[in-house]
Image (cartoon, rainbow over all chains, first blue to last red; front, side):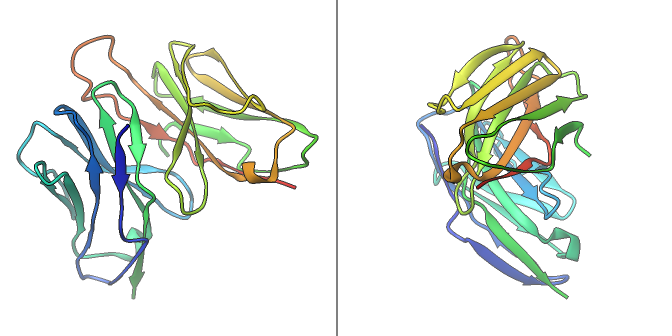
Length: 113
Length: 118
């Protein structure tokens, strides 16, 4: 079974600054997908960004980017120019080629005005 | 709005009650999922349905009974629950390909039902 570890239960960032959330995973597979989901207080889990393991180029979605280190099994999320609306719980998730999704325990991000 | 609707948003029930959670997806997906989200713990996958057939049951106690009458609706029937079952229950849906690349198999989540068992 795949294990996803988020070692930072909470992170705080000043508005307009940058914050990086860490995620590591354990797998013996070579073909898989990685995701970051955001869960704001409304509880709706929203997909932020995804990365295919076979792609070396790091995914980017506007202010969100990842640092994917396949050999190290690391998948960190960088939020640039943080906004108040970025405050939420962020979950790292691993999906095997068979489709099973495994989540980390989450990191709560607080944005200071 | 992700296209996945869950009702009710909140539910309080006693241990002897019977209640049901409902999930509806408007995305034309063929797979639906139930997850349990407890505080400080990763999301736990409970059940998976593909084309209305249950394909996964992660050792969930029988007091949780899923039902998938069609590919758009998913229910979770609850009876004789325990206080430790109090959690946020999330539904998700995705389009699982019959074969080939799974790159489009992205799960979209509802807002969840906050369940409190007294």
